[in-house]
Image 1 (cartoon, one colour):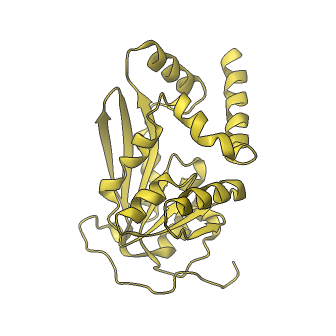
Image 2: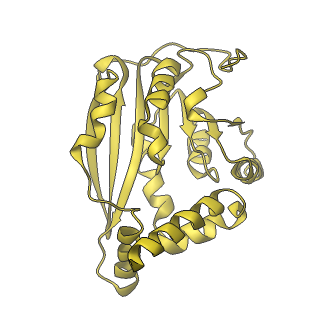
Image 3: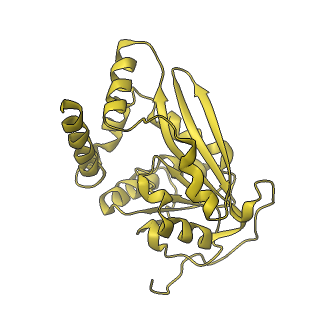
Length: 232
């Protein structure tokens, strides 16, 4: 009973953290991950060479900033207006011009084939919903890729690591990986590869899914105007 109550409280807390309390997000995320949260997010970078990347749930903008610094044409989308303001301020302070959109993955405001890759780090269950996968397939260019970081596990043996790992388990933030979880992607025509990446005292899992079932195909061509003004 205690763990169920704690899990419910934790989910409510993180909903508030992503919206009304977004200004504290960086601080809290660093504490609960024992300082590893940004390192986990950056494990997606070797999979994201662009040239056009859409980040779903851009959060405070750390991955967005790093991709922009590497010359990638990146667009961010988030349902949280508070997180959008936080990311815009953070990215702008670094001398970059952020392209951030407030919206939902189930109704992406972009033209067909607008992106070569789509990234999502620690998304909620929306990422595998039929409406989301349909929209992802629509806005990906031929042979485009979806890169998802769904989960990370803390494996360190120190007291803070063990406490954080326990908290992640009881709140459902670090469940045991179910290989069947990728079946919705496969049912929507994606070829899937799952990568386990070992880090110092932690492990992350990355899903790479290729549109049109070909992970080895080249990327599509450039698209100048990505925004779609057609109501959905």
